[in-house]
Length: 115
Image (tube, rainbow, N blue to C red; front, side, top):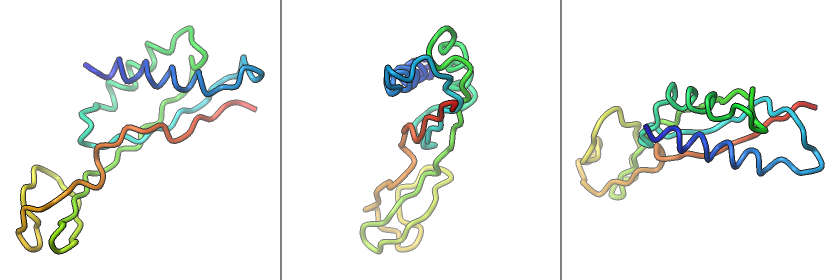
């Protein structure tokens, strides 16, 4: 379960992003984007975040996870499509020259604090 390491990194980044003159402040929500190919299980990440955030600057914050679909683009015909399973060829022209343009993200989008 690598979600614990990810949760710890999210907590560290969120806590470090709060200016010292604002502490202590209640972090209400941390929103992240997680690609479906990042091998992160949202339920596990939420559990790990809840456990790991105890007694930190972000304890009690809600972790909102937006899942990003896996989208591929064919370099030959420029066709784009959302993948639901493994793909080795373009679904339009059958070329094998494809690239992933989303689905591997793991980004913190926003950190909301109480005012």
